[in-house]
Amino acid sequence: MFKTSVFFASLLSVLPFLSAAAGELRLPAAPASVEVPAASPADMDTIGLVLDYDEVYAALKFYSDIVFVSPQGSPQYLEAAAAGQYLRARLESLGRAIETATGRPFSGATRTRARVSFRISSELGDVFGFHGGTAVRETRSVPIKDGYCKINYVKNNVPFLVQSDSFLKKGEVILTFDDGPGPLTEEVSASMKEGNAPSVFFVLGSKLGAAGRARVAKAAADGHEIAVHGYWHATENGKPFTNMTTGKIVEQLGGVKSSIAAAAGRKPVFFRPPYGIITPDALLALDSELNLVPVGWTIDTLDWSTKNPDELFEKTIALIKQRGKGIVLMHDIHDQSRLASKRLVSWLSDNGYTVVSPERMTKAYRGE
Image (cartoon, rainbow, N blue to C red):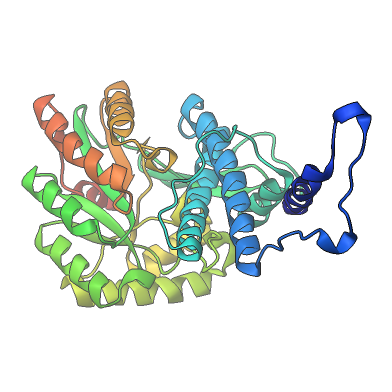
């Protein structure tokens, strides 16, 4: 696509010499007088970034459409939700790169149609292992804790953590936030505290520098649980934990657990695998060796799929009303989530819902 763009740019530069009058072709007086401005390497790099952005954005739109029409927990939903989370992170990284290259804000794509290019499809297949091998026609389940969670193998044997909320009564909600800490975490934490909504913040060890530790300490002081998500998400290049050995996962998350304990003043209790992808062996090892309670979700707000806080809020309350209770997944790294979560807390209180303590998940998992 990039070479095609350069070709047309070169073509446009010589169009002034083409005359349609009487079907004549007018050439310049001498070849030396034709000067085609050459694009600088920096300009070419920026064009490439923008083309990449449009390609990723088109795929994100495609998977967003799928998740909104698929039953939560279905193989189609799980695949599209994982792909969407990964693509949103890729998109934001490309947006930052474009702003750095141009030195000005980048508004992003607006009219790209929903589609998945072969390149993006191949990339997702490589990241998640959705392609190759023997396709699974029926979902295979491995029980972890009856009435709490299980592992479902879908799309070429990719293992997803599937959460149950059967231990919650109608009208009870647990709020969770992933992928922080970040610049918005403290405001989200304060808003949840003000709304009497104790929440769980699943954090990444790679974000626990000096600023990240201070944000975690503030959230813990606000009465929230600080939990383990990963060091990266889950590998440095965004691949899930299925690309790591069980021993390496335990080693990595043991370090994250220690970092959280040092910053928050108490040991973390909960763990959520990025994308919800993890093997039963790894999940059980994290329980036995690190004493971490696995947590999935039963209401995915899909806050990565839109930047409109009003749209996110309306979709979130629709999902909550439809289910009547649940473990809600949001991300405290998105501005739309910051705004929607503040409205959500008030809406829950005004409409007869109760945000219950995350401790309920520990009791359900441990059988207490």
